[in-house]
Amino acid sequence: MRILHIEAGRHLYGGANQVRILVNGLAAARIENVLVCARDGEIASSPLAANVVPLTIDGDLDFGSLARFARAIRSLAPDVVHVHSRRGADLWGGLAASRARVPAVLTRRVDSSEPRAWARFKFRPYARIVALSRAIEAQLLACGVDAERIARIPSAVDARRYRPDASARARVLAAFELPRDALVVGVVAQLIERKGHDRLLAALPELASREPRVRVLFFGRGPLAATLRREIRALGLDEHVLLAGFRADLPELMPGLDVLVHPARREGLGAALLEAASCALPIVASSAGGIGEVLEHGRTGRLVDCDDTIALAAEIGRLLSRPEERRRIGEAARREVERRFTVDEWVAAHVRLYEASVCAAKRPAQTVRSPVRIG
Image 1 (tube, rainbow, N blue to C red):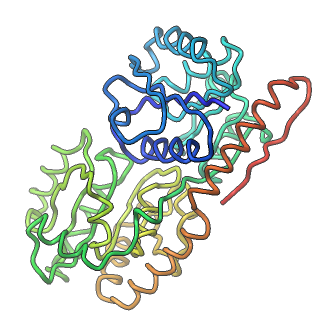
Image 2 (image 1 turned 90 degrees about the horizontal axis):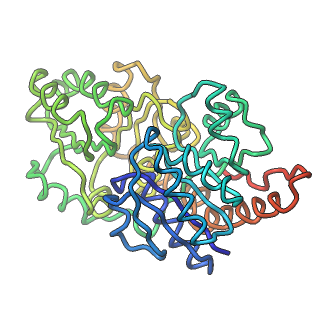
């Protein structure tokens, strides 16, 4: 079976990294893969078991994407087209697959709603739509997508790459020149509005006044970098907060944190949460979107209402002051990831999805129910 994947993201963030893991896992299962990606996409130069086809992909208004995708599909003759991202790929990729009469699958990663009429048009070409969480599934249903076309497949994490490592703390302290007694909080997310960095900044002055050893590392990049620097300066937090940028060595650094915080306003599921849990890190997160499907409050993490910065500060302070609770929650989170979010089962679920999509395309008069509900 040959799968043509479309990933329009330019950076190797959570979504694109999930594509990389999936492609390599499918190749190990003897599935042939072709990756169509943006010409300047970082995924093209990552270790990838796929034939890479770089194309110009410039968003929803790039009408030429339809012809470019259609040519690629016709020339490569895949059994299934799997679209993994937005930025026009979800619109033009589905239409191109339909034009080429190849069954198409879309992975929906975001928990934002869309106008019903637009959603019905955009999602119509897809035989199956993958929802990472129940929250995304509910929004797809609200947009008018038939339940039979929705497959709920959460993201996965490589627990061998993201794992506890006692030596990581020394690497973190050295990399960012932190005091030996620092209590290190990490945020791993693009620097964009919906990730909620401003909420954490609002909670930090009181937290830092009670615990001056706290140091916060914002891992990631994005359009809000300059704005966040100004906010950090205005709040007098220069000593406590550092924009750490995008780090390719994050798997080697993450286990050295004391707490991971994820204050997102919206979140489909949160690959960074799975990575942190796999490192046995305790997590404080908002209850937005699918986050509650990854973390159970009090057992594998601490959850707060999205707008409650007082509770956010309290939960972070609670964990920083209770090392035994940090250890207990982190270990429970690691066990949960190993049970529910394994790469092998995730890859197998996609193989079943592709087979069902091909089967449905061959029997258009019949309704083939989605074979996949995991997580």
